[in-house]
Length: 429
Ligand SMILES: [Ca+2]
Ligand SMILES: [Ca+2]
Image (cartoon, rainbow, N blue to C red):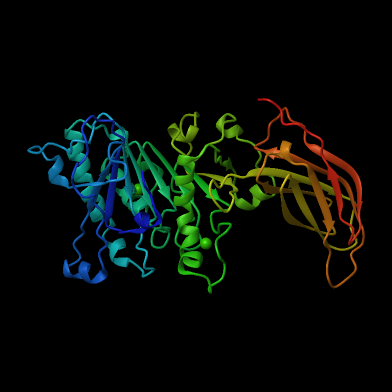
């Protein structure tokens, strides 16, 4: 499947269907590859607001050359496209907002109309023998709610909906029947990456993955002076890039159940006991790898990701115990492996002596060569020594049989960083 930045953003009123077909016929030999028409607002007005749903078919026989089709292609009097194999699962990818940045309220107005059109097609495919549970809708932004409404029309019997940063504005306060929710498919999963702007903040699936808290993503610009993509769309589009990367890569992205991102970052959610020890994963595993029954509803899951593909990172719990301080302080914690170090800061308060915090690092804990602690202090007054009774590291999700890596009784002076080398070998699993 060739998903590119532009193809993902092309046209809101476009539905792209990919059927995983291994047919024997050659696909559209001699024909030009079909592409989506990207209507302008003026063209849309000229059509008097009529929704134009376009369908492109991609199969393993024509992975890079889409075939256009319409409702007629699957009507009783027509033979379906030769590359379409009803016995194979079908992925329906529904696009989201336009790329122009203009507010596409005309699309929001018509999302149910688009869903109705798609439901006609699904009905026709059913008549050809396709099973409802074999459909997997992947909805991008507004497309997630279109998929949800298609699901409503089929009473939640379609197989799966994956929401890639489901649209937030106008949907957060909507009734569950007017937006994506867990009742729309047998399994609904949502990936949240821009819930403070274009995306939705409330959980809308059986499980909801909040990447880096779900609001802002690492590597995305925070300045208004950066490009349109960097500032406006980067967080929102990250869900798509992460999903594409997971489909192509070998490293898993697993979510940990937790009440809030704050609790997660404070190390209060370390296991997947609620899932019988098997953390839900982003990707194509059946039910996200969840084996418990019944499925949870609107379960929030948290994970940290890197800023670029393949986005995987290791989550490491830092536990720190210090002697009581006279003033608040700050510690810089750097984890180092062969060629990279990651530094994160921890604020220490006068009245607290025990801290825990989730750190991220590109490699597993067993590959980390050293830890460095720095008394980063305060520029405006002289920072006293920090007496660290113990500093411990452990991998998240927790492996019960693994003891944390600890160093005890350290004194860190301002301006004199302390570091410790680990001698360790990664175990064989
Ligand atoms: Ca719904
Ligand atoms: Ca954001």
